[in-house]
Picture 1: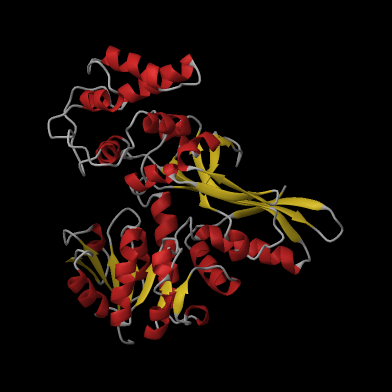
Picture 2: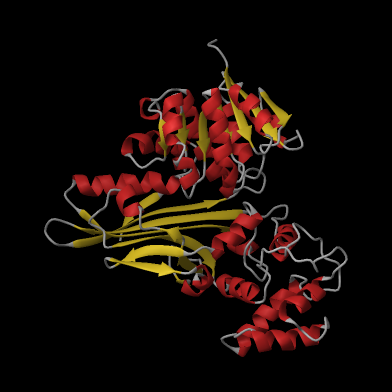
Length: 447
């Protein structure tokens, strides 16, 4: 057998197991999963061990990264620059599922000098979305067509039968990340003009959006879509929008939580152990007391519900989530947002037998040489396996694993040193083919 290949996986969260499982199939691979506790479910896989490792400890991180041939960073994106700096010192290749941040891009010169590859955006969104966007765009261009409009929306959601809570949402990935993704500003192109939406107005931009029959989705823009006109090679596009999907009713609920102070992330001196949920709400809206009737009356005074029916729905939902409860809150991070996220992560988790859904759809409005127009779609409708991997874990983890193996195998598309994301056919095709073998496939249609 050829020499073993050592892989370090940082993080053992929801998406790590399918990535580790995929890589463990290769008998050359020896996998170390670095987690804070030193324990993880990944030890069930062949040639896989767990290691206690805190990524904020630079010395330990550098030592472990240097001892491996490739590091997969599945920790929060803020830690990626530190991981990359350690990889530069250890001349170790890196794979992440995150967007390339300015802090990561700033390390590119050092990455090239070290002769290593830092491959990013190989999850589902970003990741699988790139694979099929590039495929269709290249095919259209080869036939002489132009992509005039491009829309891409993705959601990691509970399957419809499991969307049984006021938010119509459950967490298949980082609870705080999921909530904060609904608090970003957004920019996109519409009919040749850039549209900018402030973070506070993002949820009000959510509109009903049909993907496939049987679902009740709303869609809203996500982050900055403008650079994707260049990244995807569609300078002719007048409209470029990438965004997120939620079930109807979710954005209005999130807007109310924000408007009532529940998404504030500043440390509060009054947020002490023993304070109840009702008392937190009382402080946030300056209510006369923590009695539910007083809280409800004050909420209706300070928050502009669009209708009495909507006020009733959201207030009843807040009660169901325990936000008027006289039970003590489990304070996290000294702020309301972390405390709420911790609370919702327990309430809105998937129960045994429940499944999640990853829905992703690209829509291309194409203009052909004769002036005719056509609308094309690529759609992923992936349901999780209650007895196996969730759809989110499978789509993100398998994509990451496939991409990492291509780097390890020195596939010709993955040998050039630098900070990369899969925006070329040369990179996308081998990843797409590998991911398709794992059952993550977009169905392409002409409408």
